[in-house]
Length: 275
Image (tube, rainbow, N blue to C red):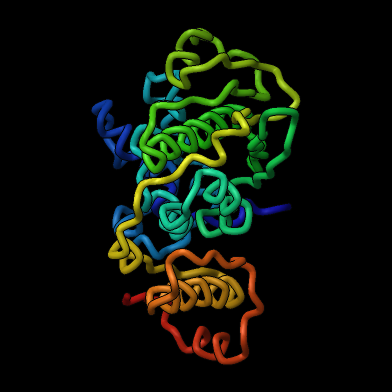
């Protein structure tokens, strides 16, 4: 039987914050998921994807909120996506930040995979959920797309919306299309061929907030594969080098060969970045 992989602790915290806001007792939810409260105190931990599914499933059934996944996205913050959230903050434009989702999303968890497709004057940011349990899948899909929109509004410092939101599932019982469209600020289509944000092409050039370099010192991850650790360490080293007096007006291509020396230094890092 195929497992559901693992998930980072920060990915679960938005559910807990929303549940607390609703006045729910968290202890029975953790028990149903097979989790201990102290496991959620260490953001470096990876937890089984099955525990993620049980926790979200419990809240979907007991919260009384038919849009639990959607509403819990309101608690998104950079740390919610582990390193990916901080990488996005260090991008110059919204398009650059979107391009970082696919290569780095496994740092957040194995819940699903994304891809970007051009379609006329739009870009489709598509997410395919790995979870198959219908109720959990529906809430997870809505949660991820809503989190993307809210985080993009924050890092781009604007109240923009996609042209449309596509959801693969039918309109759930007990909900209204108006509830979704008010949340996303755009038309929402149900029973679509995929779940996606349809983003205007010109949004890709939107500049992001000026990054505060001290945020990078908060990055600290523990990954299940050595290769992911090395990849992240290389990212940190490149950022460190860029700070040392490169000419401002000269733009260089970001893709470069990683030298043997850089890889060696990366392997020695303990996954801490100290700017």
